[in-house]
Length: 241
Image 1 (tube, one colour):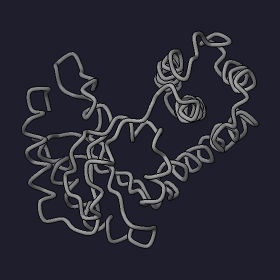
Image 2 (cartoon, helix red, strand yellow):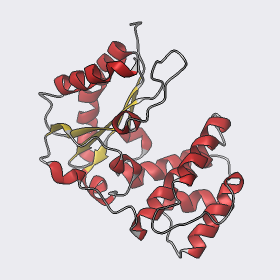
Image 3 (spheres, helix red, strand yellow):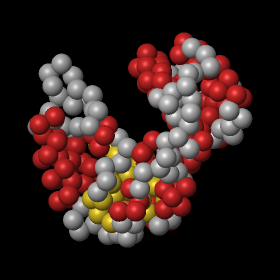
């Protein structure tokens, strides 16, 4: 899929979710923000990221059953990895500063829960409450770098860390991007922050075996209200375009 295919993707998404009930679904991530990655050929290399919101955790299996065939059709049609992070309504409301909330496209693909446009009301990025949520993906990518594609995940961690500057009055990072764990510890101490559990878990034992999986589950609990296995739906293209 190339960038000029995005209008077709948005049109197809609307069609796929026209008759879906029992959940509210929104596009998030880089395709929603418009800063998706592209390769040298011009093909989009970013994933399609959807956030389906369900009333509570007991609705997650039914939502998965509906989402999987839809994601497979989208993955096949646009030759893109299609993902969804099933999210409970309580977690969605609680995680208003989470990156997936701040990068949502301001239009529901379907709104079975009746969340309406108020769900897209922007939060103040300068609020001190935003800082732990901006820190969260830094520790997530650092933990992930222990087991998967260290170079890429360290670059992602540094990119996200740079966004801390300008958030809640942070004028400069208390340390270098080459030593992000120390930088995060310094920032948390200086600002007297209470980090999210996922960040605290990573900083307590950044090289512990299994830390990447532990941090991933903690992040999903914070963001989606469900562990990774219950929330994540990942579908790859099964046929050439």
